Each structure stands twice: as C-alpha cells, then as structure tokens.
Amino acid sequence: MIYLDNCSTTKPRDSVIEKITESMQMDFGNPSSLHRLGINSEKILKNSRKVISDFLGVKTNEIYFTSGGTEGNNIAIQGALNARQNRGKHIITTMIEHPAVMNTIKEYEKNGCRVSWIPNGVDGRIDLDKLEKEITDQTVLVSVIHVNNEIGTIQDIEAIGELLSKQTIKPHFHLDGVQSFGKIQFSLIGAGVDSFAFSGHKIHGPKGVGGLYINGKARVNPLVFGGNQEMGMRSGTENVPGISGFGEAVRVLAEQGFKETQKIAELKKSMTQMIVEQIDDVIVNSPSGKLSSPYILNLSFGWTRGEVILHYLEDKDIYVSTTSACSSKGTDKSHVLKAIGLDDNHIEGTLRLCFSYEITDEDIARTVQVLKTSVEDVRSVMRR
Image (cartoon, one colour):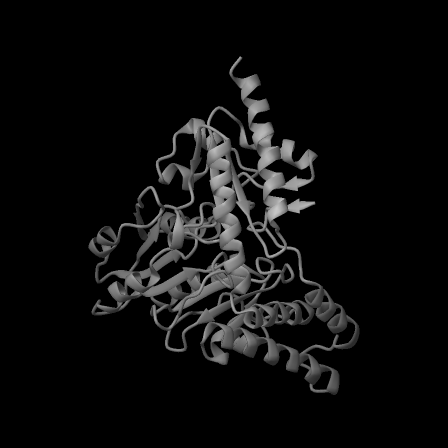
C-alpha cells in the first residue's frame, strides 16, 4: 500500500498506539478524581501538555486540549468574538480558509458581523496591502489559515503579526494551524499570535484529540460550561488515552528535529519534477520552495476527472484525495482552487497528494507510473 492522503489523516505511530493502549488498560481513572488512579491520569495530562507547550515554545498553562482542529478553531474564533462583542463586529479572514473556519465566520456574518474576505494571488498568499486597508477600529478578529489544507501555501504570519501589532487596539490574531503544526518551523510568540488550533491525527497521533494555544493575555470566552476542566476553557472529562497518544506523537516530532521534513521535501521535489516531465497538460497548484508545505502537492490534469483517477490509483493500492476530506463529499468545486484562478477544466482534474515519513523513493516512482497510465486512460475516453 502507498498512502498519500496524509492531509486527511495519518497512520498512528507504533509508540503512539502503545501509549494509548497502556493508558486505557492502566490509567483509566478520571483525572478530576482525588484517588491514585485519578492522580495518575492527571499526570498524563500534565506531561503531554508540557511536551506540546515546549514544542511550540509557549507556557504550559496556555495549552488546552480539545477534540480536534474544528473544535479548537471554533473555541478560538467564537470565544474571541464573544469576548469583544461590545468593542466591534468586524472580522477579517481569507478566501481560502478551511470549512471549520469559513463556515463559522459565515454564521457570524449572517448574524450581523461585517466580514472582509481578503483575496490572494495565484500562489495562495494573501494580499497584505489589502489586509492593512481593511483594518479599522472596529476590527476584533483576524483569522488566517497558516498552511492551506488543499494547496499547501504557507502564509507570512510574521508579516501579518507585525501589521496587526501596529494597530492602536490590536485585533485578536487567530491561526488555523492544523496543517502547519509539526510540519514546518515557526514561532507563535515571534508572530504575535493570540490563538492557534491544531490536531493529533495529522501528526501520526490519534483521532478525536487536538490542542489549542491561547496567549495568556488574550481574551477568549469559553463556549462549553460544566466542571471547569481545561482551566475552565473546555469543560468535560478529558480524553486521557487520546491525550497520552497525542503527547507521544509530539515527543517523537521533537526528537526528530524536523529531519523527516527535510526528507519529505526532497521526495516532493522529485515527484513534482517526474510528473511534469512525464505527463502533459498538468498544472502544479502548490507554490514552489519555501512558500509551500513540504507535505502537500496539489496537481491538476486537464481533460480528466480527479475522482476517476483517484479510483484508478485505489485499484493499484495507492491512496490520494481530490480535495479537503472535510468537503470532498460536497457537490461544489473547490473554493480554494477558484480563489487562485484555476479554470473549471483543471479544477475537475485535481488531485492532492500528501506525504509522510513512511513514503520512499520507490513509492514515488510507482505512483508516478500508475498516475501517468491512469491520466492517459481517462483522457482517451473523455476526448472521444
């Protein structure tokens, strides 16, 4: 099997599975309980929180555990807006956000907030001049996807943060970091980020657990009330086995020191070159070099259908995607590909290939070979 759908989810590492299993068997106590089993579970939360906070270079009490990226984005966005509702109702975001952010902000737009949707160039980078022009004294939130989940574009968060820091009253700066956490190097403190949502299952950890960084000075109101778990930000009994596995996944990332990322960057570069050389009428939608995540390669093949090619590859035990897994079952064309100006013919023939540390040179060569044959077969039918 060649698995190239790692933006949708990743295969948990063996050590992660071991940690989860051990926690479920031995440390099943409620972390809020006062007895030994509860204290042991609480230690797991503390240890994982420290591993993650150290990895991000932030304070331990600024990390909150969630159920994943969607919940983290919702807590940060809604919580920040609710805390500032008396100061203003202006939101700034981009045209290429993940549905978890875009649909949340659209709900606030329906209910009276003014939203500025900042356009982007063909590389997916947002227009900083237009961003600056949109900021007013009523702007309370700027939400940006750090690494785009479809084409891999990396936004210049340092430049955005510097721009926002110059404002008399700084808007809350939120990042959707689901595709950047553990994949690229950055500094939340250096960029002046107020909140940052991330997820376990994108970094070879378990599903159903994520994290949210909230700067200690930022004002974010909780959305769920109950027993005041997670320092009152996210009430409800914590997912101890999931958090244990999440912490282990981050521990491995910290230990690797981005060595895996360097290898993956070379694989992506090699695969891109092979595809461009061997298959005609192909558009590489992912920006080149440091403007794009090493883990994401988005390609459009003219006169094909992405979902048809996907199944061709699946028959050969190769797994890819056509778009974001969170929107792949919808009928609308990708809003991200529309935003970068791609024509309908090529949007229809788009594939997203996402890498992991398990992919080899042989996997790349095999995939390109099967992809070339698949594209030729589909075109031979469509051009009749």
